[in-house]
Image (tube, rainbow, N blue to C red; front, top):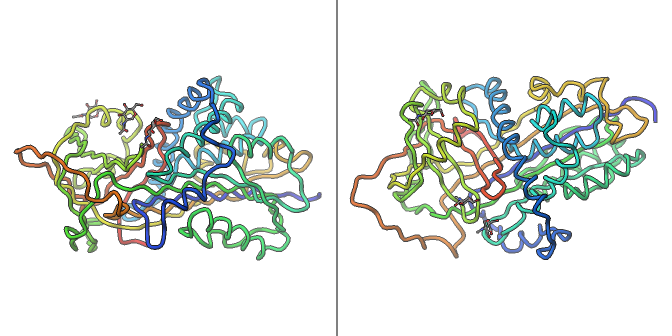
Length: 423
Ligand SMILES: *[C@@H]1O[C@H](CO)[C@@H](O)[C@H](O)[C@H]1NC(C)=O
Ligand SMILES: *[C@@H]1O[C@H](CO)[C@@H](O)[C@H](O)[C@H]1NC(C)=O
Ligand SMILES: *[C@@H]1O[C@H](CO)[C@@H](O)[C@H](O)[C@H]1NC(C)=O
């Protein structure tokens, strides 16, 4: 096939605090169950060790990405993305890359040098995806991948087999020559996988597209300690020095893992979801957001995590739903992924004998936070409060969120909520 063809990567991420109208966790969990990942399947301990080996480089990648994104996004704008989803998609690209294209992807991900081989990374993701799929009863967490492949253009068999096997990837054929039809088919797939939270993500596709690589992370959790809607009131949120917006603020007084880091001008609280996933909220002191953004790293997160202690806290948290879209080509180029995007790209592991490069990496992430859990689990938490005065955590100004999964030590989502009212 003549010409130069392109790979488009579409990365999606959805995090909801609770089920929404018409959704029922039970049947959706079943709907998403991986057939090939039955509970009886035994995974080697070696694989699990390798799975945890991804955790430090993936965390460093998450913060490196945050620094690049926050340098490009105005302080009054939200940032939200799935570091794990992006790392997974880049690892899949690496599975089809060779030479410098491969080593640049690996070093950007922190897997480079002598640290990990592609096979170890593939196996690690296999285990990680398997472990994240556990416990779908109390939460729904899906990390999935797909390849939309060109009808008349066959990728290397091993690449497709590896994506299916290690990354639980699905494949389907698309007629990219018919651009409108291709866009519709891909958007339909994405909407189904994200419970209609992300629709019309792909706007247009070049007829020379060789493949669209799709990654999605879908998380729907229920607060371990739900908020009482009767305590939700309209209050001000200070977006920046000159902008104030009115938001629904939820309020709950309870026992939380909490830490006030006075030296570093910030306060940290953990809000657990049912299951093994928590939201860590980092609230910089007034006027200190930029300072915190400049220093934040996995070392600080570890320090805060180790310093947290159970306290009674008056927690005031906006109820919100935001979405953020990022175009990642420039960010990834800045981070060292150069060849993948230009004429020197080597994806010979993906397409033998045809030159392809990555033309586009678009990422969209959605986050909804509200009071509710499922009816079955709400208002069942009884807490013994000490007689001392509670600390206050009033999230009435921009804050950082990290949604972390404990068993795989993964940062599923990360971002900055500067304006909870922004669409
Ligand atoms: C501020 O951060 C540094 C680096 O993580 C840490 O060593 C120090 O203990 C922090 N200060 C407090 C009060 O936690
Ligand atoms: C949390 O993770 C542990 C270890 O993988 C697992 O045994 C347990 O069932 C999980 N609990 C929930 C509620 O997800
Ligand atoms: C996270 O997992 C560790 C063991 O891997 C466990 O000790 C800890 O209690 C867990 N924390 C949460 C919040 O689930």
